[in-house]
Image 1 (cartoon, helix red, strand yellow):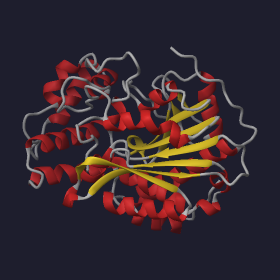
Image 2 (spheres, rainbow, N blue to C red):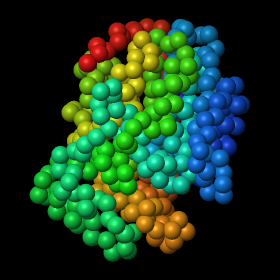
Image 3 (tube, one colour):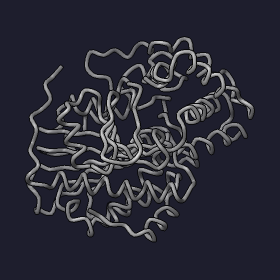
Image 4 (cartoon, rainbow, N blue to C red):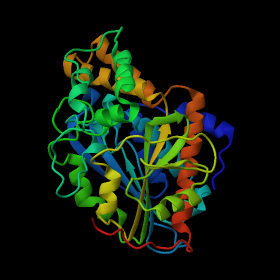
Length: 392
């Protein structure tokens, strides 16, 4: 396992930036120095100062010391504003690849800034206001409908003007929690809706640009693979500075135990249960539609495909939701350069990538540790290849 000294983590914490251009330049330089092949996928929309926005895919073959057909996938920036953290972890790992034998041994696929528009503009959502982790619906699941209870909350979640400095949203949502319970409010708010194109957690009316690209290219990026382990880096859910592995609710109990055995220092969570060997206990209380992880599992991208949302906690849920609501309202109802828009973007960046050096040291160290553990699992010749999940 990689050991990162406190002084090195301090330096990494100070290098972490939420600026897309700077993050992309560092990632590409690190990937090039590590011997990766790099593919860039620009989107049509331009960023601030007319900059090109693109997702970069960096691929590095193994050095032959591990069994063939073993791949680690590390992705960042699916929820754009979170990309500064994910990018920093990816770049730091690539810069340390010579000191990580398991990472050198296997094929690695680094997906940088899956949502470059959101990353560059400080938004969670993409250029069509789509939450990409609500857009990967399975075949036969229509892009339609809203969660139970959504209609009651929609007027509160989607204001028709930018939020003022003294906004009562938090108090009103707290009242809804008292009235209906946290789980019901969470499911209604964030589970994914397919009606209000300017609303929060909008899953789209059809597959997004990123969804289509994954369907066309993921198998090529991964290559012929028996075992693929996918760590998708996220922030904003859970206790402050604690890394967690969030698994799809449909995974078998044996798979939960396998993640727990290999990532014992991290809580392993599904929407129904919590497994951990230490640290603070956390419960996932809501379910979502259109998850990238569930789609990846069902697409059978490898003989044995294992996906986890590698999530790092920041602020309390209602505070995060209030920030998302304020930014979304300002994006749709205020000028980009207005005080309300600037204030909402700064607030959202703090909610998802806190400026605290202590938080940054903690999560960067855990992120590197998780990548090392994932690589070690993939490289281990004793790791059994599990049969594909049965189709639903």
